[in-house]
Length: 108
Picture 1 (cartoon, helix red, strand yellow):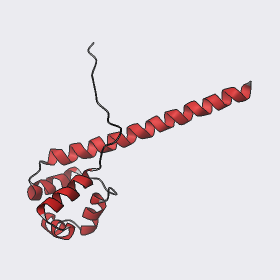
Picture 2: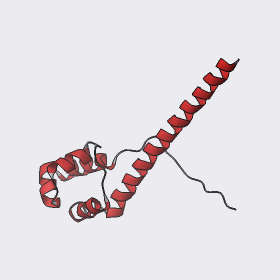
Picture 3: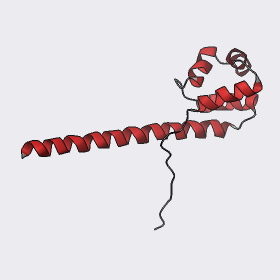
Picture 4: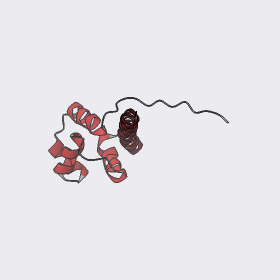
């Protein structure tokens, strides 16, 4: 059975950060972008500020305006979400280990 080598970075940036950089590069405001894409400015603001995720549907709309493939946006979002979950899981495991150590110390 073959083993898989996978890279799990400690941090991954929300794709909204990339969107913000791209809009600045294009000299396009979030308001103008929201009008061109056809979704509310509030949603764009939430994505840029890492408060909302980029869905498959939104990624397709972004592709048309930004000329960046939809799969880039969806893969970036999935990587970000996976990193968050991995870090959350690590924190839970560390907390569990500490709790077990405390319990073991109290038994003695």
